Length: 327
Image (cartoon, rainbow, N blue to C red):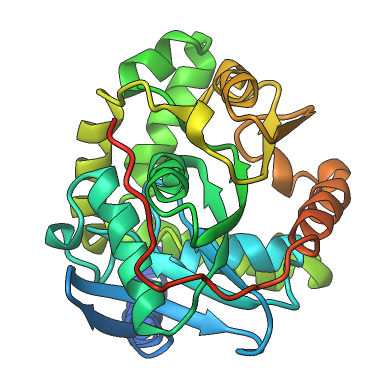
């Protein structure tokens, strides 16, 4: 009996010690992660409000602006581009309004967000960019191409949302098991301790060559409280996206989409292709994250790089010649 009590006491002490150790490691990780988020990026004041961005690459190279999904932040855009090997350009990763350090007030509507991107470019003395939009970054990218055509020389839409969508609409397209997994993942990933455990799992299970990208992609799920204002604003706007005059987009556009995408149906990509005069669609086997699947990654990367290398930065006729097209 005494031996059994001793075993239970020993087990209890061991569990408490492990829990305390994990708690300390978690708190240290959280502090380091928050520090990196704030020091890796810059907060620039524009006439339209503050915007957070990170710049990477050669400043003399053609500029590429990357818009993250929902939820996200500049760190998510960077993680996706690193995973796809998109380099050799002046990369601008921005936090859309409401995400991380960019306040919602800097751009409540997608039209205001597009104008904010143009204001950022003006402050950085960048005349033209190639725009990459991931998932929920789609509507504001389309608005940028519509409202500032002289600043947008190329547009890549990656699993991009372009038409009205709600969570309930997404759930209705899924099987019961898919819907349950989707809801469970969204609920759990909102908690930083869960994200930390996901990072530990990645360190144990990921192959050496893919460890860094998994850590980057998983870390971009952290600090959901700093991303929630943007996500809630996106959810509200996504439910009522009007019919944009896509036929007025003169920018060459590359659309890449998964054929089994339950988050953003392929029909949205097909509709965009039929409306934008210079659009090309590449559809892949896979879901919303088809671009990260090993069998698709090289083809996706090659297509994006070939498209981006098509463009050269040329001077604008005037810096204030941006057009605005009403919706």
